Amino acid sequence: MQPLIPTCSRLLTRLHLPSFLCRKRVGPLSPSLLGWPMALWHSDPKLVLQNNGADAYCYLLFLRMVIKILLPIWPLSWIILMPVNSVNTSVEGNQGLNKFTFGNIAPDKQIRYVAHLILLWVFTCQ
Image (tube, rainbow, N blue to C red; front, side, top):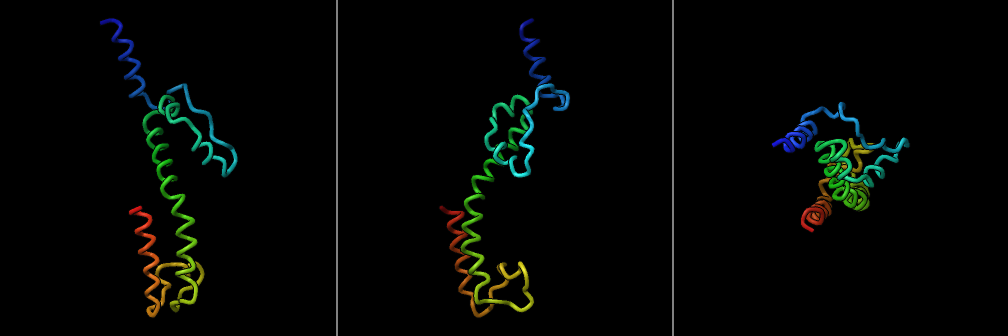
C-alpha cells in the first residue's frame, strides 16, 4: 500500500492545484503581433497538457479545429459573395460595408440568393 500513496498524491496534486502554483510552464509565445498563431499551431499538445493542464489542452485543440474549418471557408466565401452582394445591385440607404451584406440585394435581383444557398451547401455538406 505504501507505493500507491505517492503516486496518488502526485495525481491529486496535478488535478487540484491551481495552475499558477505549478512551476513548469510552456515557453512564451512569439513577441511579434502576428507571430502567435504559428507558434500556437506548432506547439506540442502533449506538452501543453503536461505543463498547463486539461483546460489549456482542450482550448488548443478547439482553436486548431476552428482554424481547420474556417480558414478555407473565409477566402472562398469572400471571393464569391462580395461581388454577388455588391455589383449592379443596391438597396437605398446601404453605404460603406453594408453594400457587401446579404440585405443589399435588390428585390428585383433575388436570384442572387442562390449563390448563398450553394455556398451553404458546399460548406456544410461536402
